[in-house]
Amino acid sequence: MRTITLLTVLSSVLLSSAHARDERSVLRAEVDGIPWFYHVKDGGAVLKGVDPCEVNLKKDHRRNVLIPAMVDVFPVRELTEDVFVMSPYWNNETCLTVEVLTLPESLRKIDFRAIKAFRNLARIEVDVRNPVYESEGGGLYIRQDKELFLVPPIPSEVFRIRPGTMCVFPAAFRYADKIESLVIPSSMEGDFPALSHCRALKAITVEIGNKTYYSQNGTVMRRDGVLVACPKAIETYDVDNRIVGIGPYCFSGCAQMKELTIPESVTNISEGAFSGCRRLLSVRLPDGVASIGGFSFRGCLGLRKIALPKNLSMIGTHLFGDCTNLSSISIPREVKVIADNAFWRCSSLSFVEVPQSVTNIGYSAFWGCTSVEEFHISSNECYMDWGVFAGCASLKRIVFEGKVPKRRRRIFEHTPDGLKIVVKKDSREWALFLDQEGFKPRGRFASGQEMTYDRKGW
View 1 (cartoon, helix red, strand yellow):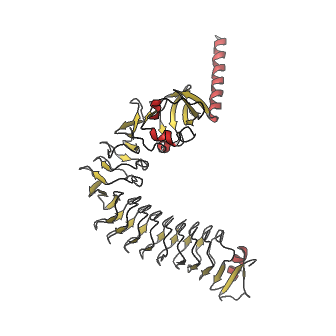
View 2 (cartoon, helix red, strand yellow; view 1 turned 90 degrees about the horizontal axis):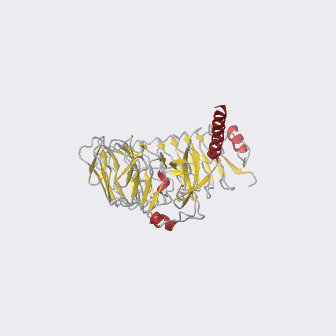
View 3 (cartoon, one colour; view 1 turned 30 degrees about the horizontal axis):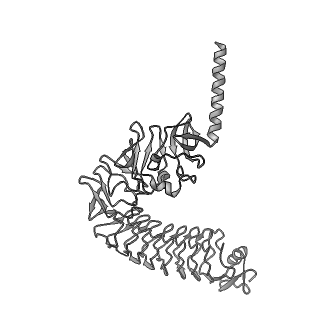
């Protein structure tokens, strides 16, 4: 009896040791001709990719990729982001033939990016015994949350979210770029998903009886007056004068849109609202707009000018990031914050004036504004983060009207060697600060007088 007990304990110790080793190691196991790489986590296998060597791919695998329920002695619990792109085995030609992805009963977690290589995927199917996931109409749903989790690139021209669905995962439509029509059930009440990548989308319909959303002319509104989604193939759009807000990423991805009219009724524009509208040339924002979310105009490559609302208090993160044709900007007198990367790579700007109201200029706010030759900073004692002017390759002069920034972090990093700093009212504080930053005055110190500082060595 003691011998059996001792053997049992010894076996348990050896097994525990093997599991501990497996937790730290990338292992390999061949299942049905496909050699998978995986590691062990909490007693289950996390699939990471396949071995490109010695693959015996069956013809059926070229259309239907079946995720195994077991590798070695471990149940498959998770699919990582790069499971199908880790190795040369999943090359472009192979991935384009895949139409169906089948998930096993054992799976408990899948990264939504796992399907990114399968550009012609039409269906995601799930073993009916799986307690977490289920499929219908080609889409992947989470059972308990009544949530649509993932839609394949080509489910059908018309995709109907199944009745009873309460919410949609924010990135559910990340790869569904061939859907032409979307139907929202009456049960849906959660936040509306981003449809930025649904480039072929022509119409969205909300079923009658939905208490949160309604549709009109192919667009979707919330019942509190916020426009939340629109077709992506539009060229012009007039926002209804009953609308009071524009929802997150509402027009994002409308790559063909050139003209947009926003009525005076709109007071709020949410994050990413117009990002990726590459052909949008100009837009007038009503003065009643009090807030504009970050990323709202990022990637609007055609945007040349824009009049910001006079009561705007903040220019958000990446608000105009990659607006490479934006040639002029007037920052309203009420703005207090210019956030991180606000004008990231606005390479056509030539002059920027920062008003006295500004108290905070964020990290790399004007990074890569390669055509700007002069900044005029009227603000007094504002905080400036690292590299505010970094990458401004043509910058010749920065004029400061007020006192030394209260807090600052290497604000002149990665600026041209010939840069000149003009201080309208010189002081000992300015002299000390600029000396630490590598600048020297042209003449004798004279408190309260204008002074030009050159880079040391120039």
